Image (cartoon, rainbow over all chains, first blue to last red; front, side):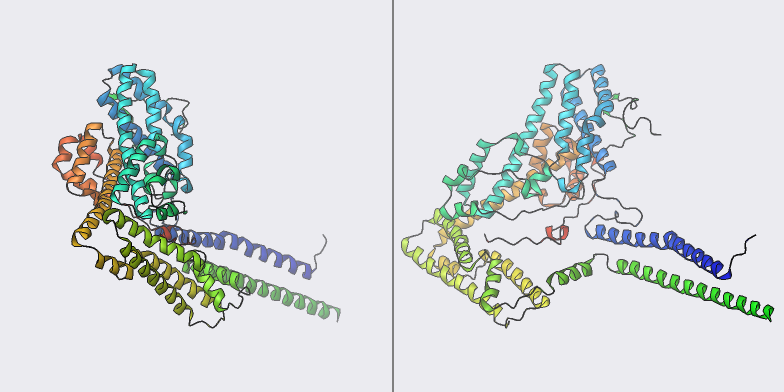
Length: 281
Length: 289
């Protein structure tokens, strides 16, 4: 057997020891550093105003997908409850509607929910109107046009309130920026009501919490009503203000994934096979 | 002889081996302590403020020209509208808008306008003098700290100038008040109230839409709740307090379904955040109105 020189054996031992040290570093020190970074991030999240979300090892960002899924289900459930109240559906129609909702809700809303999890799109994805749209599609397939028209009336009434709210907010901002008189405010309100388009209302958040998402007002619409100094201020680019924070909506309803959709006495069946989460325990 | 020589060699090798082991352990200890100190530093600085300050200093280091008085003045006015002339124009227009509003209510005479124009010039001159006095302490030497101080002063001053519109001590405001009758002042006050009423209305509608989202109200419920919010100025409350009030009110008990009342029980509390706390790194210049 070939003898190994002590010097070579010494180097081999040294390499083994260094390897051991590196392994220890990887096992103990790197996780400690990551944990410290996690804590720092956690504290940062606490500072940003997400109480209880910044615990180390339990990092949750606002608008997390599970939270949004529950919100979406809550919004759909609200619509189903309203439909149950106003559309006079028969029991079979209700059952079809809730089953359809349970089967289809995730496929119809998933992409919007994924977009909504990103904070920079805060306000530009409106889950309320998404819920209204998808529920209307389901309702259309199970009801008569007369029953559908009642739901359409309900949606039109909601839009009426949204229009009032958004125009009022736009007037507030214009009054502050241009120093409008009471008469001018009334005149501009009339112009905005006349020019109104339903797409101006992007979401509740966009209307009240982020001035960069407010609809653009063409100077030609209101310039005749303004003085020279006001017209000059109108074309001046304003500071974009974010009044709220992307911390998730406190005013959203919530329905857990385990709970079933309900319309009166009709309760949806369990999620069918083929839906994304059907195979999960 | 040979035997003793071999033995000596083996001792030497063993000592060498011990030396290598000692060095390895020492290096490992140094490595571990260094790594821990990095982690501790991160824990002690969760906001990363020091990192930002360090970054800012690195960015500024070696790139600070000696600014003369005129350049410093340009720098200051840069934050207040772009240039001295632009600042003058913007400030004049902002006061003029106030006066236009008054004119639309009270119809000012030519004589009053001329007096007010003189007062506006005095006010603007007063602000410009204050800028000059802000710069008087600097002799042109520029350090990162000094530049930061100056930036701070400019930001404070810009905010001050912006809110001066409502400053009742402004000369134009005093001149205006001296020219108006009590009746005209009352008219102006009534006009201002319209603006406040609209703000209140906006908050009321926002509260209604939030409740709409939370509870899924129908058209009848919406109309009644809108009326209820307006009666007691409930729109001034935050959303969780509003929900509590609605749950305990008779209106809530009358018009809401048991499910809706139940969903009002658990409403999380929102923490409104000012913009600068959301994005502390971004500083947007305050425009003059």
